[in-house]
Length: 227
Ligand SMILES: C[S@@+](CC[C@H](N)C(=O)[O-])C[C@H]1O[C@@H](n2cnc3c(N)ncnc32)[C@H](O)[C@@H]1O
Image (tube, rainbow, N blue to C red; front, side, top):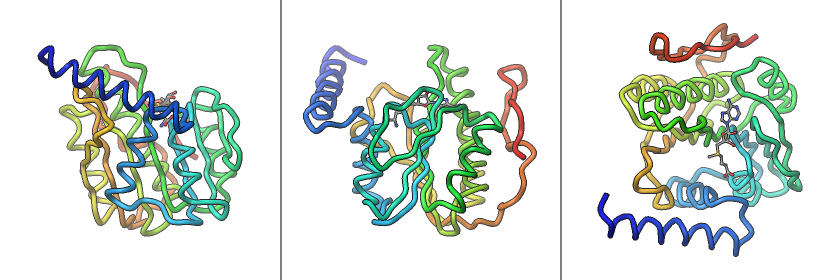
């Protein structure tokens, strides 16, 4: 990346940072979801939403605004989410059974939308970060299998890399439409893209022992399993 490109990117980063402060959003990430919603029409008033990797809560704010008081929004994160009016939160690791069980009991049925902006702690080692991102995505897909309504939607972040095709395939098996999108509010240097999926078939509504993880040997282990 040249000096000019870096300058442009820093200005853009600063732009969304300032905008978020001014408009009261908890993170710049809010603008990515707003841009995705504007382009793909994700939310409807009254929808129920589960947001995985929701801290500090920028996406939760957008989801709550969009679905209104008739809707239901639940956020899950490893980190504690500051309380937000009209939004429920769960402190936990989505790869742990206990968190999944808590989520299932809180949702009390099925949800219209699953969001996942989950990201691993960046190690700075490209293939490791990619593998960990894919690992988190397989859990988000499993959450869909458990709680997403037929015709439901999923918006999920993934770091691009050589295992991308396996997660894309899992989604194409489950959704009528799968689109890859890079919102303007994402950084140019980032390898992140968002998968925007609509028309969930709900045919894999089964008890899952283990996620279909496209695991690379010795890179990490899959923790636990679902009930
Ligand atoms: C980029 S941040 C999300 C920002 C959020 N969308 C917002 O708008 O404020 C990614 C989050 O994923 C969470 N995360 C990573 N792995 C997770 C896991 N296994 N279970 C739950 N949350 C996880 C991290 O703690 C982090 O807060």
